[in-house]
Length: 189
Image 1 (cartoon, helix red, strand yellow):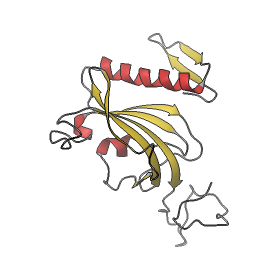
Image 2 (cartoon, helix red, strand yellow):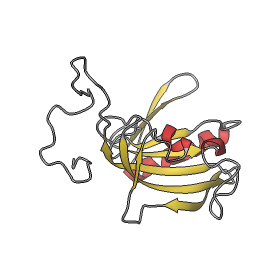
Image 3 (tube, helix red, strand yellow):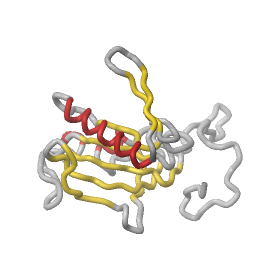
């Protein structure tokens, strides 16, 4: 996925190709279908499949960073999207999570690494990386493969490095502090 509705790929002979789409929606829909096709063509899904839909801007997130996320989750059924089992897209509250804290399924922890603010990504998560054999009563059957579309709306980078002089430093922070810290600790930009 490239800015301005472009996608690039290479074929079996390592020849590079580019596609320009007429709209952002067409580019996003194509990228979703590529991810589903990757899933359907793999003999056994044993890790999380990730497909960027929109790249976003800024620093890619890492473990320890806090995010606010809008998402929709579907069951993967009959080689495609089944029913929606969870979403916060039309709700007032975004999901807050700290990457690496273990508060969300393993497939999210893995699949969201490197995302940027404003980025959207498609994740196809095998049962072992989701809810496994137990599922979620009334919502996710046992051994379900899940599909999520996630969008990172806000990011708060972790400040975890310490310099040799004992002062806290992080190469990932902007040199100038935000003039107006917001009350919830998330930067306003």
